[in-house]
Image (cartoon, rainbow, N blue to C red; front, top):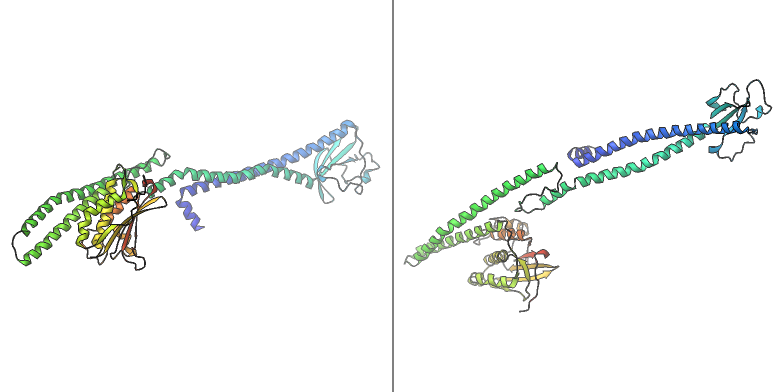
Length: 459
């Protein structure tokens, strides 16, 4: 009961349904009682009219009354239609058949309707003096009359008894449909990605909800402006720092040509590595800022194997420096409808990560396949892999796995995830070798809506 009261106080929909249902039940009960009593009284009035009509027939046509004793009364007669008609002595004359009258009625009864208790049984009696001066009494059992009246009154309640449950169901359904736009609005906002801050459409919503939606749109606009300001700051800062870092890199190259001691050369090598790491970090920051920008980029049909070759041409020197066997598995090609630069950025970051975290003499393989009308891009390496409990956190900016001694910015997978979400793609992480639970296999799944011309080309 306490739980229902709590839900009732918290839910407008439940409160409205409960209030309307309670009002309908109260009105239905009051209407039912009034209808029952009215029909019950009307049935009694109708039965009294039947007695008056029978008496008028006897008086108008001077019909004789055949004496029927209690013993000779037909037992199989329908009690609902049985009316007992008998003479009633007026005190001045006595009929020979008065002793055999069906009911022992007093001769002093006045004309009109009476409810009498005769021998422990209630009767409705109409006494009337006919034109000939004789008095007759027409009687009907009260229990039979009440039963007929009760049945008639209950029949008037049947439509109401059928209508009330239907009306309650209709009210519940109408309330649910009225609140459906609110549920749809909640679902639409809940399913949005982090970067989807466009205003909520309010034209199809009820007037009472629009002020609330307008307030949400204003908040979304402020959040979007704040995020855009942060992205601009990161992009501008990274762009501004590229010039001095380039200058430092040139100065370090010139300094390397100068004759110096071995200790100074070792420090110079460390300096150049630090400058290179900073340049790589700035490039990643610029890429991450661009990936977060919600731009409506034009799509085109591109070849996945063609993109693989372009990425390998750029990163092959890095792989050769570590003696890594890198290549494309299979000769199946797939054409997809995407923004080319987005897909290149995803593949390049995945391959770059794979090369960086794969030890010397390792292996990196790229492949593509089609499964259930979805294109799957795979990048596998023979590195240490990522533990299952960390696979969700590695998509956070600047997060790096514990114990990793590789040089990196922690932005590679964040960039991949951001672009994939914008494209409507899915990024999956798994082990390259399930038996030894080693290596990392990153799969980018493009949904069916992202597929353009899908063709297998034999090369």
